[in-house]
Image 1: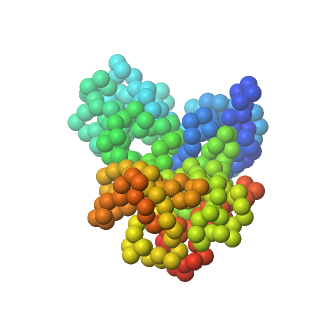
Image 2: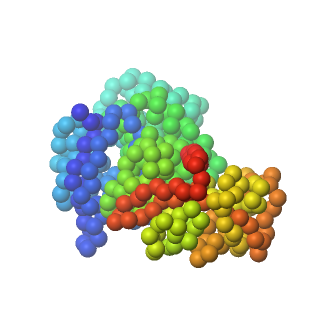
Image 3: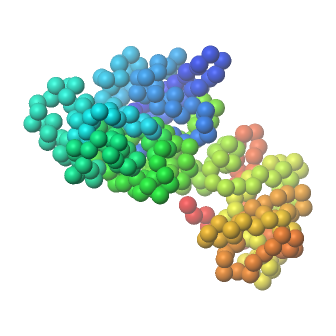
Length: 353
């Protein structure tokens, strides 16, 4: 039996359908990322799991028990919000102890649990500080510790790192993954940051316009997208309207749309390409320095593509004529996605995530 089972979850706010017949299961101990564009319905789904919003239709079950009508405080959940929501007049110790005090736990048990969480979250020595005396990363750790204190069955995180600067956010992502592994708690977190979801989650659920587009591991979603939205949303990509104009894809039906990822493309001189006979000429429209590589925008017939070029290779400049080899593409037909390889080469290009 799945730890969390959701079926037919539907919720409207006036004319806006925030959740449209969403169904999924989550196994115990999994860390699930709800990923998608703003306004797609991610937070609404999280709030319905928490009991902060009531679904118009559908069932939510924890360990097989329907919890639609169970109040939030009796669902066995811990909540962490992006703005921390700490009590400003309470020190770190009292913030973490708050939920246990509400439950009227014995003082000795509260002290033991809070001290345990102070060590787990790396906050030892900060118990007497007020939230105003902490950094953003430390405040977020206090929020995690407070949510974990009552030992919930499910931890829900709403954009937990959104208010933290980029460097600290990366450090906290690694810390969160390690902490969840050690505690073993089932966790669902909302994010619009693809890198965050890929780095942290066991599985990702792509939410768009209230619908669950796809659920799977980060690698599966990246390499085998099931819908045109997922193919275009995950990673960087170029959308082309005339795939049949690209060498090696002439057999594709005219007007078929496709998505091509930068790592599917080689841009350079014929002697640099693995299959020069499968390449065609293009014109460099722009180059962008990305730190570890160049991103090159190139025009090939009616299509514009983006590819990568190594810093060790000779530089390309706007207006240069170059050669472009497209190894594979995602083709769209009837809201389904298929992977098509360049027919002029034999070896498929490995895809890494």
